[in-house]
Image 1: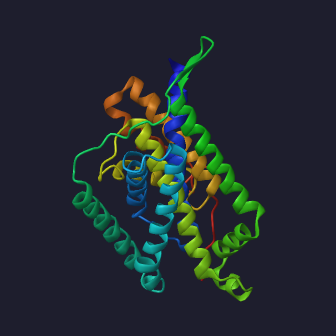
Image 2: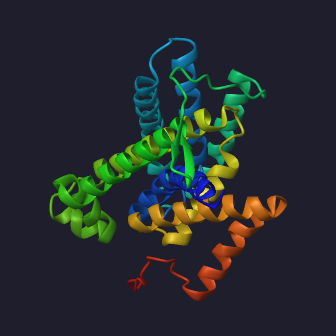
Length: 290
């Protein structure tokens, strides 16, 4: 049972990591908490559901279309709600983010209705027994593999490509990066696109895992993705990955022993870690320019 709960925690935590990466990438560039990210996650789940149920496309294609749709939505939100407020007081884009989140929630309620919808599995679901230690379902294996591939791909993009170099330069100093010829508006839009695509993928994976999609499904996973980003060190990409996995493990193991307090346990771990290390597990202190 213990090893099976570890697998459950890793599967759930990997989706939190994907959500957390969206938060941490935007924060690393703009120092903005994109509270609309949870609704991008929800929208991605609905796009995937529509592709599977209405257009009968295979699950991998539905996942890619969902990521593309979430990517476009994220860029549109950045252009419409954040870019005009880039030089405004820091509270203005935060309020705008909350407004976009509420707008998308209500738009989904109008279009899809409040009821939860089942996410059909258009692939064979099997269970793999690993000796006497644990068993893992094909859905959990799919979630882990997709999450690992996406996280490795993001790591390669950020650290091994010119685009990643431009993203890191913009995150470090936007003014200097612009003087060096980097088009920071394009880089910011690209950051939103990548983070939103990862959030959309997480929405599809969670939808098929729990077999449920609804307009309010983004609230708690979005909140926990944000907690995972803070836990690992907001603005730190490896930290977001680690934070999500830790949060998933703590939540699942906590649910085994104290199911009614599983959310409280996850947030208690966050508080304890931040008391010991305020910058998060992998975060570093940054001196503010004056």
